[in-house]
Length: 297
Image (cartoon, rainbow, N blue to C red; front, side):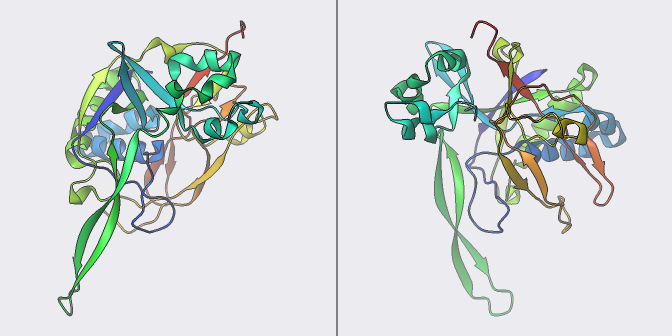
């Protein structure tokens, strides 16, 4: 992993699901971020971007917070944490979406602490609001008022992503992220949604640790060989994703991914990103993972 990037949003962002509606998700999945950065790379560097895109990997959007003069980082709550065994109030722990990465081994030792206020306060780093918008009928000139759900990041949190790429492509990555910040990340960027100022940092040691378990920080499209490795010891969730090729009306195929927060007992191999000839786009095929749970647990 080469860089951790704070995305300091200057406007709300939007990110739709499979259904074509005015609703939004509260985060941005890695496939959207990967496609957006890749698009910017090709705009800036043309053919030079091909080798970068083939090996570029990025996480889904997560959130950092400042505590005791230091940053701590929220990661997706591992699905392997069996909240049903919690005696206090397992429903509180079940609803958690994120946990501080610095506390992950503490949770393994004592899952009951998931119900503490120190965890519950980080359950939802964003607020979804409805923003009024207006469309004009081109035939009758009648206006039509409607509402778009938009995501606002709460003041105490900073969205971040983690990225991995070959060192020789650092200039391509940084330039592409800066262009994306000025263009907008997510849905409806032409309306001013998703504008951000990037801030680049080294990746903290938390994300480089070794362990028995591997937490997905991005969506994962396993190869046929890797599918056979998914055993009963792996706890995962499958989600469907689809999108549109930017600047065209071509629809990307629906793909089944293992979602963020899934936990594997093997580390996925790093492989080149797949090029889809049918629509001319790249697909991130190997995920970013964070290992946890050393032999002392």
